[in-house]
Length: 142
Image 1: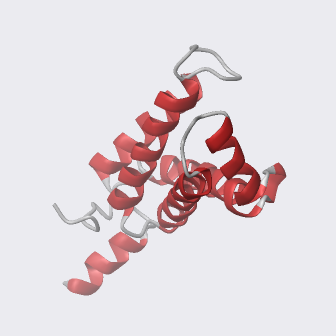
Image 2: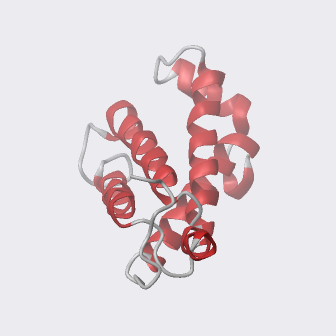
């Protein structure tokens, strides 16, 4: 399966792709740059090390933030959508296991994370669909 393969006439993945992309992008920039009320890489790294026991914290925070940031951009653009969705899924499964597994409801529960994982798995299966760069690349290859 090619990560860029998609059905260019499939509009069903358009809204989920944009929504998940924006969410992942925003959370990644919170961790990496402190945007949107986030704490930035150093403080997030401290949280990962001190509260989650993930050492070295800055490495794991950078990996999580980078995965969210990159997958968000890829999903928004619909470029390598399956790769972006897989990256989102992996990042959210780690968040589920390390932070959000103790309860079901927000603010610390898993309901939100499970919804993001479901969106990501759906996009991994469907691909970028209509209005994606994946669809545009597929047309250019023909």
